[in-house]
Amino acid sequence: MQILSDGTVCLAPHFSDAMIRMFGEPRQPHSEITQRDMDLAYAMQHRFEEIGFQLLNDLYRQVREEDIVIAGGCALNSVLNGKIFAETPFRHTWIQPAAGDEGLAIGAALHTYHSVLKQPRQCFMKHSYLGPCFDDVRIESDLKAAGLRYSKLNRQSLLDEVANQIAEGNVVGWFQGRMEWGPRALGNRSIVAHPGRPDMKDILNARIKHREWFRPFAPSIMAEYQHEYFEHDHPSPFMLHVYKIRPEKREQLCAVNHVDDTGRLQTVSRDENPLYYDLIKAFHRKTGIPVILNTSFNENEPIVCAPAEAIDCFKRTRMDVLAIGSYLVKKSEN
Image 1: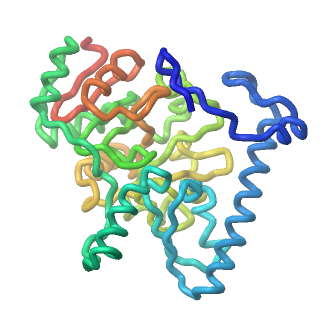
Image 2: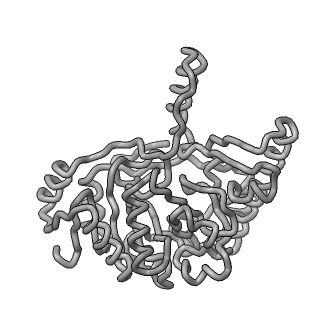
């Protein structure tokens, strides 16, 4: 990996010359996505699943246990994760939210604590909100420095106003509490929107995300409604499982329904993230839908962490509203 003078990251090829000889020159960024490209992507995923399920089934025959813990970069393949229950005898999974290399730090710490220092196991990881947190004093200071008009709201007023904005079809930057640890935005550094608007996916891509047409956005759902909307009820708190959306709910979730009628869902319970849960609940009261569209708070860059980064992303994109701490900022007033 090389970081150029303008901050651009240049990666070495992740494929060999044999791939080029067999399939031709690699697709260039931003060029047309051809049938060959789609076929290669499908074949890679299909073969990955074949090997993954073979390994998992071999493991089950050795351990004869129905619970499995998975880590490593391959554990972030949420399509495979969602099929584990149909393709293997395993009935419960626990997948580390930062399953890639970033998770090595906590693995090393836990190994030292338990295996070297012989300390008892006493914690269970129920959420991934382990990153930095910023108080209202810092947030207001950054809003003033950016020259933005804003209003300060109490908790319930903020929830009601943001739920109204989402219900009206506006795109909201949602910046609250501690940042998520891992690659998924899980309701603290998220862009949230209406999951049932047919045009919402195109709106997000045109205004902010600029992603390929086929890439889906994720549904965050109140945990107790998962079985009503998805064909599997195993929880997915870290957005690491893809399940089929029930046929009668696909129109209601059209903005998060993938081409194969699946969704990479995040199940949200109140004890894991009370504020985000209550936002979805407020939206549910207004629309009858216990789901909101959730995508990471960024524009082709790392997920925002600090208030100034969120404010900068809000200002340079066509985001409608920013809910940051106790403050609400509307693009129409700025």
